[in-house]
Length: 320
Ligand code: ADP
Ligand code: TRP
Image (cartoon, rainbow, N blue to C red; front, top):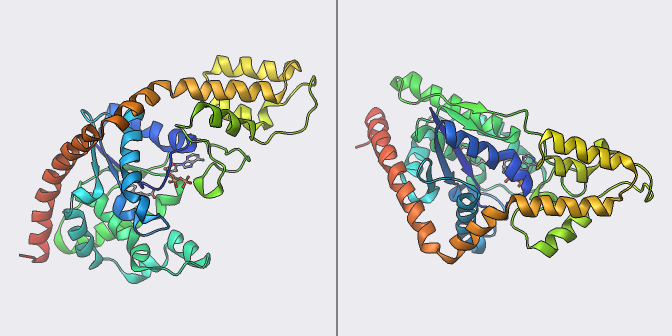
């Protein structure tokens, strides 16, 4: 089965990204043919600072490789290295009613926030459809906010297929409801837009400082704490098995420890969990040529599939 996922290079990865998206990709990679790409064309449509885009694209590649994307198993590339996607984007535009895009939640939300929309923002879902249909992806793991984009992809593909025969695979979204929303340091959903993240690859001291900022209640020292309503506990459980969670809960309830203690423990958990990835990351940052070579090999594999598909699509629509 082909599973495809795209990641926008829009800043430093945080532990919400890891447990919400990356961990899922790592599992998919073991079971299926995973296609994973860095959606740098998509990043042009939004608020990304373009002078940082090159560096962010490189860093996301480094981070994904460090966290375990395995180029031996997964086809891993940069979107802009396979130009066929832009050709398909244009062809699919012919099968995309303007009304469909006008109903886009993500587009409408941004307009409602007062952003003057450019055409890239408006047609974002068509490029996303091209990403998916070009490689005949069957399953696309996404967060809830992307479900409508997947439905648009299905609509566009169905419209095309109705006119030209079964050319595109109709993809399905995988939305893992079991993946809880990871809370940020203020207890709201962790998101870089809310400035409440804990980045995966922070230095040790800033990491402790960030953990110290996690909002907790004001139970005085010496009294039992309630794990179920504690953000520090919620974050710690992401790194622990069931038995260790129970053990931690008991220590909360014992009244022997204050929040400061558990914030130190949380920092240790995060620090240790990502230690192997941090080592790999230091290596890749020192060897950018290896990272680019990996992306190049991925792009070649993706391009071979894309070229074959585009020959069929062009033929169907009469482009010579
Ligand atoms: P952000 O909200 O920080 O901008 P993105 O929208 O770039 O994050 O999300 C990238 C991926 O990470 C998506 O698949 C999204 O569902 C997942 N993700 C982001 N934040 C969280 C979170 N707090 N909990 C679970 N998953 C998350
Ligand atoms: N829109 C996705 C996001 O912001 C990124 C993306 C681009 C994507 N193309 C895709 C995701 C294709 C899955 C499949 O998270």
